[in-house]
Length: 485
Image (cartoon, rainbow, N blue to C red; front, side, top):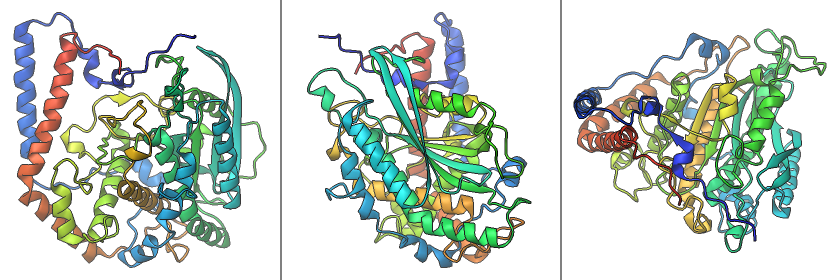
């Protein structure tokens, strides 16, 4: 019987940005000074949270690369909310739904995984998307394995790509019953969300493409400037221990391939030399689908896009679309309440509360290292069912999954400048009309609720900081050790 590999621990994947400061022999006086300084910083953050400040301005380069980004007008929200039936793909209680089909063991090289890859190819082909398969073989601790990344692109002629990604494989375990591990949150549910994204937005993507081509192109080209691309990675999970070598096989291979200068002839004007350079932003989804996710911004340069996810959550919630039956001030007040088990509490840690701290190793790393702007949507702490047999259908919360799908849909709509009328943006990229009064009203309502619930919010900030400090001081005292689960 082959030895059972150690399951990777949370610490194997989560790294603190402050870990570079680690010192096993810090004097007690130094640690006291650090503690005092950090407490003062906490108080400053809590004080700053009492006032409303505008979001950070986007870098000029981002504005230049995404000139059509603007909130979808209120008049178009109703059309957005009825794009497709969320249950068709996401209702895991229905055996015929896509998510139900994904809820099976699907380790690298398994028949189940191959079947699902074929299923996805057919699904996107039927939608009219361009499908590419990145097949390769790689050495692993348990021998050579075959892998296959799936790359789905709505308009391959567009110069740039707004990328969403998730991994399709589930973790490999060598013995029974662990070999029946499903990985419902890791990452069947995120894959289903991306299928929903493609199916729901394809009609609006087609309208935008037709409008731009009819107007002679975009940004000085005869084609669209940007399109939606979805990647399903193979081989994210480690076979034995999570190391640089034993992990993210598919992401590493695809990043390497896409970093090579393209030799294929192209009719696209001014196309970047590599596929990697065509990615405007890369959004990775992982460990989502359970109740009460809590994501954070890991990378400053993409903080503005992370904020858009949070803004969209608020916008949909106040409109009564995210959580039917709750809207306006009623939604905002409930969303600000932080009791565990409250499904409507925000999915996103505000960036002002130390949202940027360290990183989680995942499929985005090779792209990040190549200079691609990354947003990593992963719940931290990890779901309690992570890498256990309990990460099955019972770990999923359908209202939360639907909320994620709506948020992802609207972020994409606003990023690419989509709407049900084929777009009111011009070739020059002027923003769509936005109802300024509605926008100001929503902002004032949110500020009012934030101020009235500052005590609750401050408590959550303090809890986040205490958790962070605990991890930080454990590192300094060399007690932050890797452990098995």
